[in-house]
Length: 271
Ligand SMILES: [Fe+2]
Image (tube, rainbow, N blue to C red; front, side):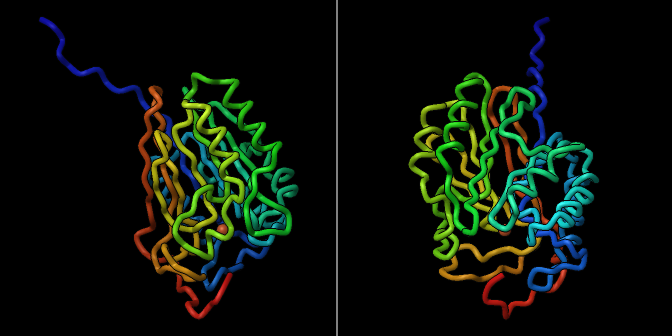
């Protein structure tokens, strides 16, 4: 008798992208009334209840105040997950301090990493003293080299700033200011399957050719999609899960807390 049972799909590796945690040195530190440490702890518990992760991508604005003590808080909170945490800086971080304090004991500030059949590439899009993003020639060269090194490995590219407009004028003044150079490299390497970022504190999904372009909610405050100017949205925080399959396909989605983790000060005109 022929066996007509469909072959089981090989198991994926699971990534949790947890971003824009905005922790302070002071564990009571709050962003517009939301205690950012408690928000992160709640999102991490949600990630654990959702099956955990093989690897965490922490895509910037990990510390709001860029202090060594805030990075200690980041380590303490993320250690609960029990998976490697790959970190990259955002505009609120002190990139040097982040690399120094988030690069040991399960935390990695690195250029690339293999996970299953995949290659993950991490870029620094920050500009000292600026909220906006830019990919320096050295970052672009490193991206090109990493992708050239492993042409057969499906690739996920991670950075902090959005490389495309997301339709929110005030946030789009702070996107990567040289996206053409970035996408020229992506276009040369057809193994790139997705680009993920933080910074915009909201979910976003678009396709560019065969590449998924993905933004992820912050673990604390959410910005109102489509807004011309600074505005927050009262929607619970969360994280993005990505299941990466050996054949280069991927599935992804957002999981949010069941309710708001605190009360937002809606009178704020900025953060
Ligand atoms: Fe942020």
